[in-house]
Length: 128
Image (cartoon, rainbow, N blue to C red; front, top):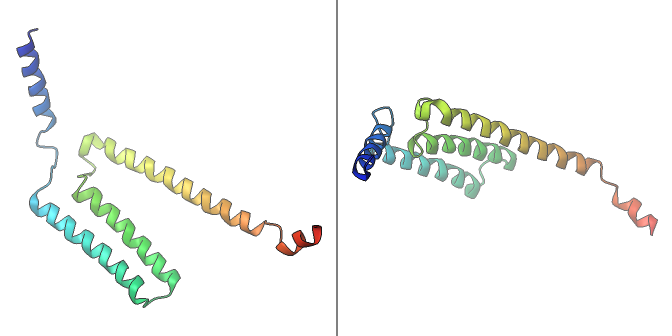
């Protein structure tokens, strides 16, 4: 196979990869994603700066906004959906989420139990 024929084959293959089944986004889509990102950042910022809610509730609301913002970024900027890459992107995302949940839940569980099972400070002072 000549170098020219090989290059034509590579170009054809490259063009096939970017077929109609891939969503590369539009200017309007990027603007919608940007607008949503700004709003999803501004609201939690206002909640913290204004101090209108209890700290625990504010933390939960900020976490919820963060999760929504992750979804917005995945859809509008990373172009992830159930059809992209034959579904492998979604499978990789689900696997990643499972690992992150296990790691975070395990870390919180360990830290909670370390805190409750620590030796009291007053016992340490009597030992010396």
